[in-house]
Image (cartoon, rainbow, N blue to C red; front, side, top):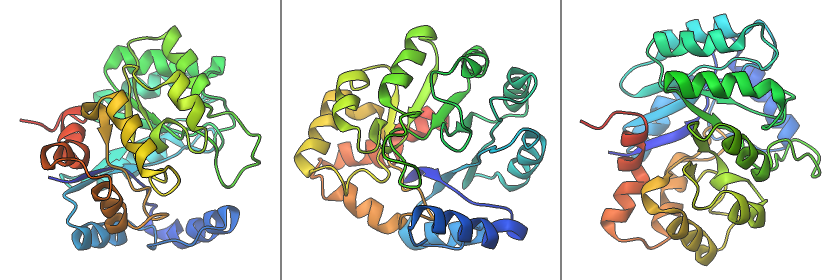
Length: 265
């Protein structure tokens, strides 16, 4: 079983507009049209069984619409993660509702939500997620669409959040912090968190990537692509080029995610 723990899609009526805006902001060409139909076609071509579809609430007032959309698209193949903006009144109540409606996680983004990972506004969301057993996944590290000194998603900030709420279930994207690799190794490697591989294995050397994965624990690392900004089939080939043994490859490509997402029988 292959599970991509980091993908994105948008409602059909806004997908084209959203993709154009995001592609222009990041100067990254897309590998798909940003629809769930396009994502499923990409998954079929790459041999992927399931993908986590990460929604991001970029404004107050979006949680209800995002929740409804996530409920409408979720299936055995599309595992939807809703989102709530940190400034949403009673954001913790939304996290509780996500859990009550059967979701296993939610997505946050410090830049898109203008809220650093260790900002006090995040404490209620983290605490509610820990209380209700929800996984929090977040952009980690720098973001190509933002200035190079924007550190709102710095690895040390997630470490601080974990220090405050040690029971938080956290999936750190981009191997814990895109292009903040030294800080990842100092602050996050070896901690009780999950890491995923998207947009990292073409930036890290093979030696450093395998060392980081081994040191963190190969049973706590998952495959992610960040589709439609990366091709899913090439993202799998990047895993293969690391040279792990077949049983270790299976862990990264799916077994770990199945356990993390509570899919394992």
